[in-house]
Image (cartoon, rainbow, N blue to C red; front, side, top):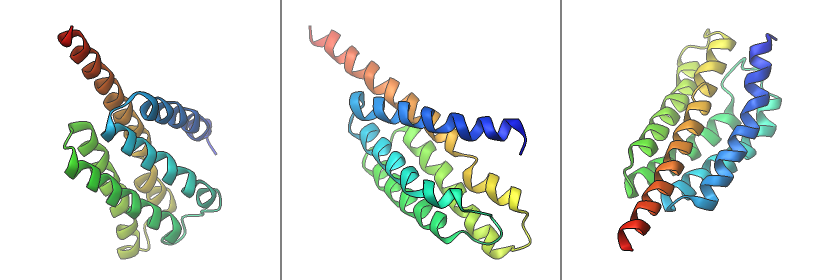
Length: 146
């Protein structure tokens, strides 16, 4: 395995935990909901990911991706924020990766792995942006009320 893939996997979990904990602690309701969904389902999927070989459609991973897609879609419908819609869009793309593997079983294992997991870092980045915007909004409202 190339060194960049090891760094990619090792750095992801601390990044995810930091962003989600700060989001849950300091974010508004959409940030807290998205952070809780993302953290809970990533933790749920983590035992599955360690055993995945990406030879066929990974049913457990697909199920957690679908649940996360439904949760993020629900959250986006209730609070249409651009960062949240971006997270939902990335989740839709990753979920469609499972459908593409189902339709095209000859898809390479690497392609399937990239399509179904490549957007996770970007989702965490969007969540951190949402958290920063929520903190900034709260501060500007506090300044205006004084």
